Image (cartoon, rainbow, N blue to C red; front, top):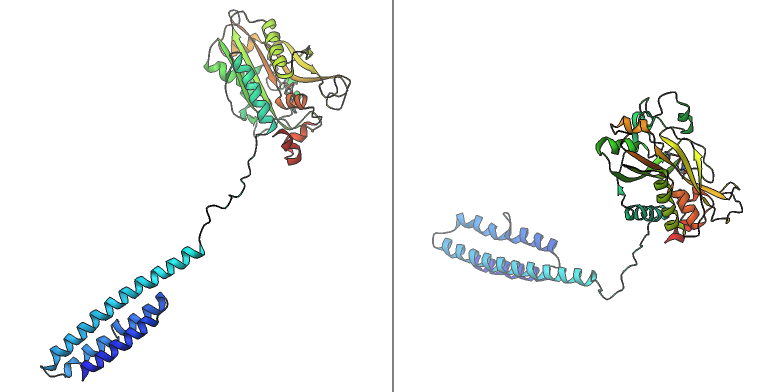
Length: 341
Ligand code: FA5
C-alpha cells in the first residue's frame, strides 16, 4: 500500500534528520525529501494512476507526512542554529576581567610647548593671535615691506619661489601688512607660523623654522614700549636675572631697527657652538614700523606709530633647554624628543 510506503519514507526521513549535524546537511535533507523533485512530491506525482477512492487517502497521507516533516525540520534547524551560536560564543568569549592593552600616549613636541608659552606671554600683555598663509605673494613678503624688486635686502632672504610672484614666506612680517589692511589702530597682534629659507643649515639655522611676528600700532608708541615689552617677555620666559642686549640692525620695514640677544644659557656667556663663541644668542629682530609701511596700508604716520618684532621659537627653546643644535628639533629622534615629555 502506498500509505505504508509513505509511512516508511517518513520514518527514514525523521531518522536521517536526527543524524544531521549542520545547516548544510539540513539543506541537503530538505531537497531530498521536501524539494520539488523530492521523495514526498514523488508520491503526489504518482497519484494520476490511482483510483478515485485511493486518491484522497493518499493525498491526505502525503499532507500529514509533509506537515510532520516540515515541523521536524524547523525544530532541527533551530536546534542546530543555537548549537552553532553556542560554539561561537564559547570560542569567542571575551574575558572582561583581563587587563587592557596599554595605549601609547604621546606628548606635545618641545617646539609646540615653547610656542604655547610664547602665546601665553603675549596674550597676557593684551596681544591677540592672528594667522597668515605660508605660500605668500612677493607683494606681501617684500614689496609692501619696502623691499621692491632688486632691493639688496632681498639677498638676506634666500627665497623658495614658485613663480615670480608666489613664494614660500621667508618671515612672518607679511602679516603686518595683511593685518593692517583689514584692521586700523589700535593693533596688538602676534602671528605665529612656519617660514622657509633656502639656506645651508648649521647649529642655529634651519631651512624651515618658526617665527612669531609681533605688531603694536597706536598713538604715541615709542621705542621704549618695544624695549619694555620684549624685556618683560624675556624675563617671563628665562627668569629675572637674564641679560638682554639690544643692538642696531637693519630691516627696510622698520626705522630704527634692532635685534635682541640673550646671554647664552648654554655656556653661561663663556662662548659655545650655539652662540658662535660670542656669549649671546640672537632671538629676534625688531624696530619701529617704518612710516612708509604705515602709508602703504593707509594709516597716517603723523597720527600713529608702532613697533614690530619677529622672533624664532627654536632659538628660544635652545636657550631654555640648553640645546646646542637647532637641527635636533626636526630630526624626529625619539631619544631626543622624549626628554621633553
Ligand atoms: C626677520 O625675519 C625679520 N622679519 C624680523 C623683524 C620683524 C624685524 C619685524 C623687524 C620687524 P631675521 O631674519 O633676523 O629677521 O629673523 C628673525 C628671527 O627668526 C631670528 O632672530 C631667529 O630667531 C629666527 N630665524 C631667522 N632665520 C632662521 C633660520 N634659518 N633658522 C632658525 N631661526 C631663524
